[in-house]
Length: 597
Image (cartoon, rainbow, N blue to C red; front, side, top):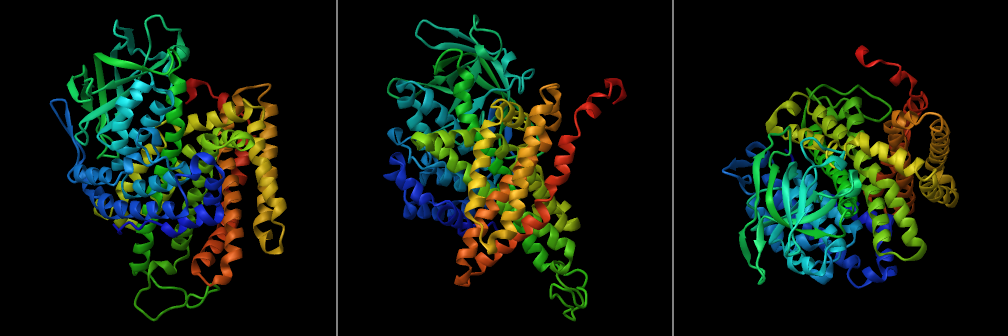
């Protein structure tokens, strides 16, 4: 496997040339004092060192060894504890945390780059600190002052980690039917009893304590999701002096043996009258949990991107070194026979197609994820119209980020494996691990089919198209402002794609009035039409900046322009067949009786 190299130049290009993050920070009072360009660049450079030097080198061994389970205890893979301690010592567990409780208060547009680095280095390792950061987000927004003072400070310090406990054996995405019970106690705490499955980081040896965020219902709670509450349940109870007390009545019953992310502990967690503390209001647990999950879903999208970036770097290095076959004598690209017995496989058109697909989709995904992270920052730190617009766009694009980036991420890990040929199927080259690791990203935090339904049914149809119109207006404004001759190769196809997205949206909203199944049947195709169109918008933005800077002679900008051109010519047309499928209607799906499957 090639050594992982953080794409720092591309990240800086996006932050400061394309999205002008430093201008945004200066205009938002809550961020102006905590971050600027110099600080952000220093953070990215130091995080790159951790990702490249500490985490990436232990990834393959972690995949081969996995975690071990004995007598209720989980041991992480060799090297993970030392790498985690180094990560904590650098203060990275506090990066996006609330400054009032020891966090650094960095914006999502910056922490998104941090997350990509970690995920490219190793998704399994990344899950431990990222889940903790997500849990801390919910606790910071909804927890009582006492809970924040006692637990949040230690989570930011990296002394304690966290998990989120939602899924039960009979209740996956349908959380309304969970059976875990919370019984009020005289001291104001709750006795939590039940079992949860698929709990990432539910038990491990990286930190002294693990803080579980658990969904449960009171005995008299309303039926369905309206009766769910959220509770904080520590592995070890905490004394009044904040020292660790006795072991709480929570235990790991077993670990899952999985297709991938082998070095991440995925646990069955049993709560047997464990002491827990209410977070937020009774029966408002989903609201509290979704504060975390909306950020986590974007983070899962970045996991897909991270694996795809590592796959591309590996495949590119292999393709440049692998001698196999010979180039045509001469062709329009200027490639010619070198006279050698064999040329690198870079001379073959299909290999170049695979590599350019990966490059264009990876760079587009990084740019689009940065754009979505910026909307989350406006929603969190903005004021007035900027806050309203940021909230609308973040709401609309959260399911897109999770599903689109992970679908592309899995596609690109498989494509990278294909570049290797037979060596891609051999474990020692590392491509097999990336394919296995990327596969889960399409499933957890809500399957991609559920994300597509969320986008089309809840966000688009649920707002009668108003949320989508916010994004349409932004794309329209951009195309109107960039009518130069040089930009027409990007603006013309983008304008067509936007028009067709509008037409498809209107078509489905009308058709669904007579049959709601029209939305579910078209949802997956619609999400991808939206994704390719949104990525075209972002690629056009990058192209505009690259055009302005190409006179510098830096090959980076030439590469960016040519990759944008490739995206518009070879990848944006994918949406055409998706539109046809989305318009085909639901009859062909529901005309099949179950016994005919």
